[in-house]
Length: 414
Length: 103
Ligand SMILES: Cc1cc2nc3c(=O)[nH]c(=O)nc-3n(C[C@H](O)[C@H](O)[C@H](O)COP(=O)(O)OP(=O)(O)OC[C@H]3O[C@@H](n4cnc5c(N)ncnc54)[C@H](O)[C@@H]3O)c2cc1C
View: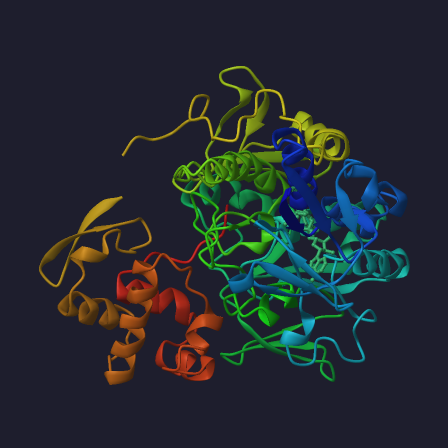
């Protein structure tokens, strides 16, 4: 009888897994099943551009089955529970699916209900998110006619996926209102629970000028307790308040409830995972990839792509009875839109903070690290094409290996 | 990174005054760091500090939410103990790294 590998979630990470394992595992020995409750696959990085009318909705959504190899079984079902002790998953429709190997790729989503007052009567009236397709579209409609006032861009708590997205939103908002000739009517404030917009020493030194030059005010160390919709204020646990007319918030990010129902997650429903092998700490035949893990790497599509190589290798080792290998270095790579046709690029891992340099070819580039440039902006826009055509198909990106390169980076040796 | 003398001990600190090596931490250093922040350490403070250190040793990212669910203090009480920016201030006194984002 064939062995069974089951992938939960057909988003960025699950789709990459399906494509790569389909090539690696022998079809006569393994049956692969992938399960997702959605029928659509969203290009989430595009949600950043929707509110500013820079992408159309059609550019960021495609059918989920388009990217799953035909010989893999794709089930459009909601997963109820993982029963790790019995090597099976239960579906909401009552069916049971047994597995020999399980990959959890259920991602993370926003949970506005975690903050008192957020999801009430003002949700999608004066309070918006842009981390969902619906949120980004509703916000686009609001921004088209908004006449100005206090725009507050806000992060509820860490960790969030793509941690730089709210900052990019602030930069793009500055450009957007400038182009509409109404920048003087909009006061932009960036509110974060962290100690600043930039928390790493080199980035802080290089990039602090951005906020000032774009007249973005910053409120740091702000841990939201509630939204007071009567007064249009966000309130923190230390009783500080920030007034808003338009609140663009990144609500608490949490793993899917299936993790909670299975009793295997942490307080935010993220799955305890070895940060180097990507094997779960739940059971040895369960691997975790993408936003669903609790590892201290960024929650980003690019990271899922780097993780994929390590997960596939370790699954092959596990199948062959060998020890899994601690090869994931936390590599992350991400473009940061700074507005006016420019962007930054950062490339870093668990040990190495973002620094200046050239990428992907050391000494040549053509992309510049930690420095604004036009070509980085084209890189960001090209990322959508790369995402749909290379990344989720599990094809390696030329010159960008999963292990971070130190060559081409200006690293101060300690 | 630089060496700083705190309470007579030479300790490794980053530019923002956060200790780089938890092994160098001791109670006298904590008292001195707390004094800089005008905080007088009570029994509850010490409990929070050792909770942060435990989390740090387990390589768990420290968050306000976790502290609030630690059973030691509520988030409100955490703010009363370490006013204004409790996570940052408490981490500094505990000798654990400053909570950071990716950039
Ligand atoms: C605004 C924004 C901007 C971003 N910008 C960037 C960027 O510039 N660069 C970058 O690299 N990344 C970016 N990201 C992050 C990136 O989109 C995510 O990190 C990535 O999609 C994570 O992939 P994943 O497979 O872990 O999760 P997802 O792609 O979210 O997939 C999870 C899947 O699991 C399914 N699922 C969950 N629970 C169940 C269940 N119980 N039953 C059945 N199915 C289930 C879901 O339906 C979903 O399809 C951005 C994200 C946002 C929101």
